[in-house]
Image 1 (tube, rainbow, N blue to C red):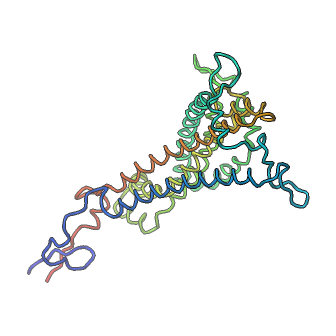
Image 2 (image 1 turned 135 degrees about the horizontal axis):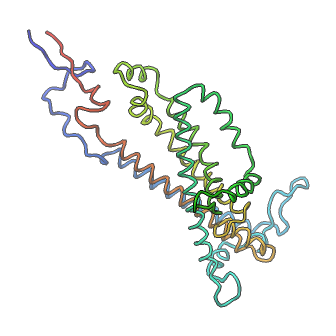
Length: 341
């Protein structure tokens, strides 16, 4: 009576035992090369898109009408005069000019950079808070179906409230809060509005990811006497990562939009939203400063999107690590069975 070790898949092991060669190192091989190639392609396409937008802008400046375009009497195209649509180089050149004609005035570029730094910080605070709230709500709804049925409609309905009306209300409520020596600051209102917009895509995407494992996978965890929390950590959370990453991108964009709109609605000083208000007052005679503020808002969004890309890379590198010998889900598939001959 002899026993032969055979792989769990039922196929015989290849002759010689070492024909497959050593396992590739983490982060190497065609998959890793393709991943970096895809990222470089995305960066190249983003640069090409910016160049095309600038080219279309200048082309319309060249061939468009100073009075704009109309279709059936309805304006559909903007005016191409220098006041309404300044040249790209004029907008960039304005960054080096002073905000006001005084000796101690800072340049527009410095003001925009300061506004980007302020808005970036408050948007990140709101994004982190929104992600935490969204993940906790998703876990709670995945744990209790009753909570999901009762809470999910209100989560969806919460996004229909206009921010222009909500931001002043939050500023009025928050201005009366005081916990010990900690008083409510203006930037907290902006961060709260950013979190209000950011939690929604995270909660919905995370909930879908937590519910994505099939019944067979869940039943397998139960057969190993795994508790609900062990199933959450070992099965549901890893399965939710592909759903969470797109949700984080949407949450990042929503957080930046919420922060800028809250700054405009409440008049919070220091951010890009405040610059948009200040520079729009002189837009009737010179709109280049207003376009610089809008450019600062776009840069803020790109910076937050870049941070989300770094998080995506970190999560992807963690998932690409090889499983430890003898542990994890890979150990279940690598076990051999005894076949009696």
